[in-house]
Image 1: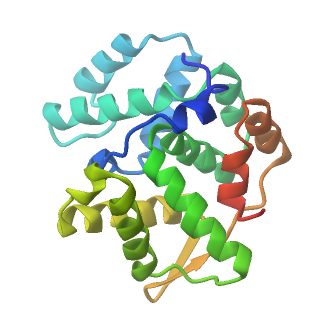
Image 2: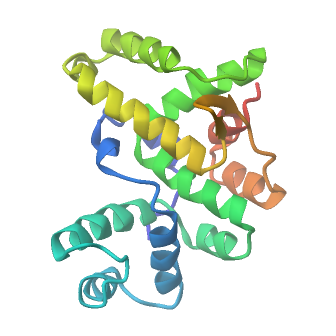
Length: 210
């Protein structure tokens, strides 16, 4: 299990990726995977269970393998302390830990939360618009050749994933297509875990504070 305490430093060295658009929040699958890891199963053993027992309820073997690959990679971004915290926490905190593992994987997603979600929360503008994401991507095009090469379709799919993940983690509340920013009140145990891991930046990003 890879330790998370160097993640903040690693975040700055990661390249931008659109790989997130192939994923879903997959909270139930993530929880099942962590449960098996906590019981001593190895990733290859879990892979066999995912395929042979259809552990994730996939429509076919190909999809089962794909989801396993994404989930096992995501779970590599939480350490033993994080897993212990996960299973001693309420549902809201568990969903946040799933989101945090996605953030730890994806530099651009973290920057979106930090530069768009957090800044809007700080200034008291509580609605997240599609135009906010469009401006964000235009700014990143200037900074990154990789993002500059993305098609409009790619950017829309990535944006959709960002909004969906934030909604699934309860950081957005959607009513009649209006996306209202709802920063969480972090469980103190989660806050201390992130701070001990050197990830105060994640605490600030998802709670919308200075």
